[in-house]
Length: 191
Ligand code: AMP
Image (cartoon, rainbow, N blue to C red):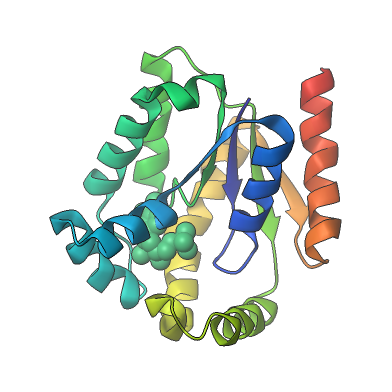
C-alpha cells in the first residue's frame, strides 16, 4: 500500500502515519524527520536545512526529490510506504509522479487532513510547550502556515484533479481522525 498524508503543520500527519505503520506494517517516510536527523548529525545538507527549517521555509525541491528518490530505492519501502511531509510543492508532486511511473508503481490514496488555522496555531503552541521548545521551527508557525497556503495547498489540487484525493476532517481527537482515515484505508485493503 502506498499512501500520502497531506495536511498543514500541526494537522497530526506524523501521529496518524505512525498508527498506519503499526497497523499495516508499511514504512513511514517523513521528510521532516529525515531533515531533523541530518541536522542533528551535523551533515552538510542537515546544517543548511536546519537554518531553512527554523525560519519556516521549504528546503529546495531538488534536495528533497533526491532524498525521496534514494529512500524509494531502499528495500524497506518495497512493501509499501506512507509519505508524510512530501510532496510539499507541485514540482515535488510531479517529480514523484515520474519516480513512481519509472518504477511502475501507483499511489493507492492521498489523504488530506483538514484543520482550521486557529486550531493549528493552538496545537503547535501546545506541542512546543510539551517538548520544551526543542523544535526550532515552532517559533515560525505563521510563516509555515503561509508557506503551506501558497506552496503546499496546490498539491492537494494536483491530486484532486487526478481523482485520487480523499479529504478527512482533522478537527476531532487523534482517535477520531484515525478512525476516519482507517475507514478509508480499510476499504482499500478490502477492495
Ligand atoms: P515537518 O516535520 O513535515 O513539518 O517538516 C519540518 C520542516 O522541514 C518544514 O517546515 C520544511 O522546512 C522542511 N521540509 C520537510 N519536508 C519538506 C519537503 N517535502 N520540502 C521542503 N521542505 C521540507
